[in-house]
Figure 1 (cartoon, helix red, strand yellow):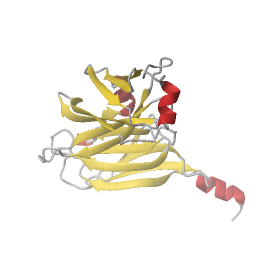
Figure 2 (cartoon, rainbow, N blue to C red):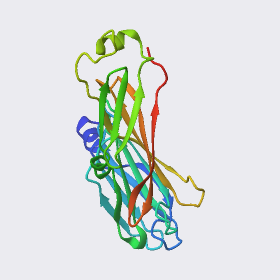
Figure 3 (cartoon, rainbow, N blue to C red):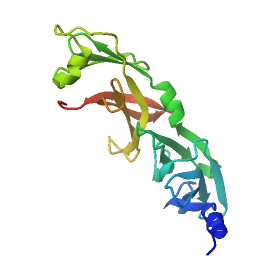
Length: 241
């Protein structure tokens, strides 16, 4: 096979994820695909598009995604709204150092595409302030719900602490950390009622990405035509040296 033919074939859209289930609400199984294009020397996939083939009519609808490239695109079907019809959860990893993943939830009930969740919107809403304090503490403030958490880092190794604090536990200079955008969004039916909630993970970092302090875990549920914060947790790592 010549090189020009190989290049042409690699540039053609192909199915990169597939699930089946009733997403239109007519009690007939539909087929849900993600298609995309990739090159021969990289697992990175571009032009990722959602396709839904109606099991009753055979008609296929194409639904574009504005963040439409990444690694390892995934599909999951589940009822997130309580209407008895499966919605479509889409994920695709960006491949960056923060482990960030773009997510969407799309409803196709009644053969009409409607975006229910967009990770860009979530990331803009759920912002945090991370500030190092004296006496080996780090403060994390969640802006949307005005919650404040304190992480004790006194068990970190002396090399780490001596870079930040003097012998009296006072900061040598102001330091701020950061919380990454979504790195995980997991469907979990917490109350076992057949309707999925969402468990969202965001990594907390200190001076740099590898300086991991823990995770913010938000649980979201569908209410009044949108996903709202139900509970929030801060999970920390054990002692690090």
